[in-house]
Image (cartoon, rainbow, N blue to C red; front, side, top):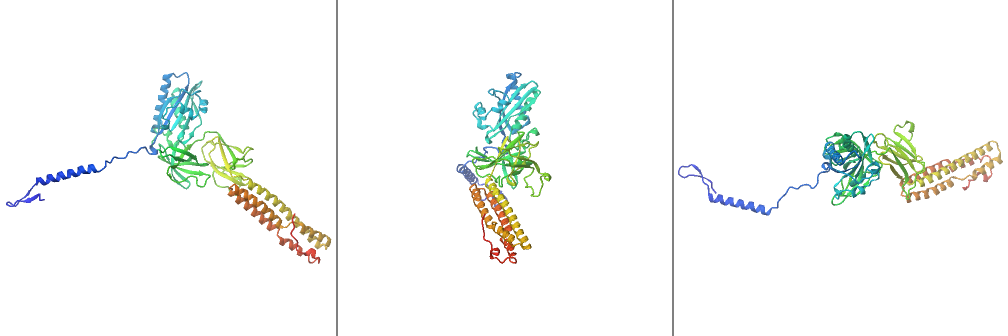
Length: 519
């Protein structure tokens, strides 16, 4: 189609618009647009069904019970509003808080909170309990000097339950902030272990990207210690099962927004796996010291579990093994040495700071366990170690055998010395008697057979208990005793003494090779 043409008379270029062609092209393009709209599906931008973990606020339900005649209905409602406003002003968007009055709690005191259960709380709460991450129940009582506030917290999604924390305040205006500080003290932050690199792990905190208006309520300050928990989720992403990884702690070393860099302290070789695997992931739950001390129970792994009495417990600053030649007096890493009582218990006092210390459990000089712990985070702890009775029995029998071995070596040396003295004095009668005494002494094979009698049943017992470490130690002790027997009861030494008699005696009975005899 020609749109620009040259006039044949004047030779000028003129624009020739072919109307029919242009109209037909316009109609075709409209048809194509309509067909494309009909044939192509409508694309709508995807809207995420949930926020990222670091932007997901904690849903908090706070229930306050009052035991004071100084506050009427209006005064209580005013205080509830102040608690709500104080929380929003200090914590900000990290918590989505609902504050209600708990008129059903009796008595409204710390004692009533200590007896309270999560089932009782849910019984008096709205039906939509699955929409709450943290349940907090507080009590406010009037005392002679002011007010006593107590708080207890539950986080059922991660199976966390706090102890009762309380504080006193002298003025009515201090109640909202005091209650909030106690609530934050009972609160345990939750995160997901995002990456593990050797002895370091990265934790992504829930609501960690949401800044708190008051820096003292920042999530990075809510806890400096975490425990890893294996979590299995259902298809709807709700938590199905929780399994705490024992004797493992994460201590925060660096904070970068919602990400925490932590050192891994564990008594296990491979305590924490890598990244998320399907519906299984590893959570990190904050822990805090709530008790003045912790009672440790040392027991065997066998069923039924038996207490280990009079076992030495060493508390150390690090998990490094002490050097064999290092004295306890010069070891600055040693904190304290304890001894288990008749129930296998020791009391470990909590320190002024929440620091990870290492616990070394010994049976004699034999190390049974080496695990980290934080005294005060739990009232009781139980450390189960392999049943060491097979090794102890073998060690006891071998010590007795070594005592007899020392006596046998001393008797052989005494008899040999008596033979030499008799030879020097040319006393044939006394020499023959000394030779007869020397021949009566048990030879090395007798003691080697007794070592075998100790080795075989002890190893079988250790194998039946799947105690590989005990089996190795029993073999090593038996091998060491065998080497001692071969070294000090060598038959060559006795034959060498008898050879000295050839120059004095011609009697074949005196110079013949001795026959092996038993005890």
